[in-house]
Amino acid sequence: MKHKSIAIDGPSGAGKSTMAKRIAKELGYIYVDTGAIYRTLGLFALSGGVSPSDAEGVKALLPRTVICMNYGDDGLQHMYLGGEPKQGGKDVTAAIRTQEVSDAASKVSAIPAVRAFLLEMQRDMAENHDVVMDGRDIGTVVLPGADVKIFLTATPEDRARRRYLELLERGSGEAYENVLREVMERDARDSGRAAAPLKQAEDAVLVDTSGKSLEESFQALLKIIRERIA
Image (cartoon, rainbow, N blue to C red; front, side):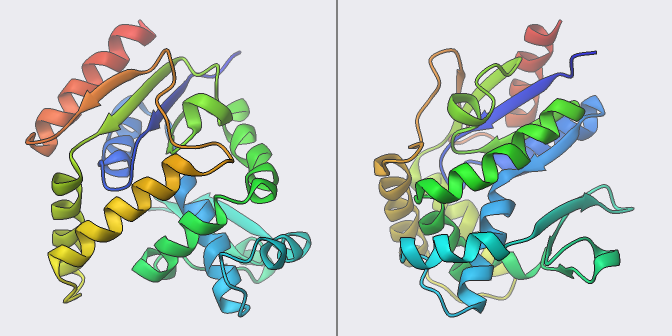
């Protein structure tokens, strides 16, 4: 039986993860946060003293990189470095959510060897499960044959505001202006990279959530997905 796949792409802070998690729960699919995979590799580079911008240094790490993910009792995707939990792997699910690791993920994801290394891991999930997968190149590179493709976006200001509020809840005192600058720099980096740049797939549906509430955004996406899967 062929499994169903939903690809949600878009820039940083567009709400991809929030929407994808909720849609997966609604449909009974598995949610695959591909950004978390790149964040885990970014954390591995940082912990090893390798600059995420050093392509050769990061490539040298790949042969000894073991990234695993599984789904806990909470239904959420957990990321592990060094193997599965029973093999002594370290749960880095919380550690990969810092701004430093986010920036590192953006840099390592621009390295072609990294994308090739992680590609099969992502495709295997879609081969064996019904999935909702979000990222930057899911509909264009990872799952070009996805049943539904959505390109989720919002203005840089809207996305920076969401990120700022998220950081505020975590106790970060970072200024909104800094967050906005980081969002715009990330956009430029993700769209301008040579390896799988951020862009809308030709057959993806564009959804702009600027000014919309979470519920409005969710209902808009769910309507599109149900129409296309049906």
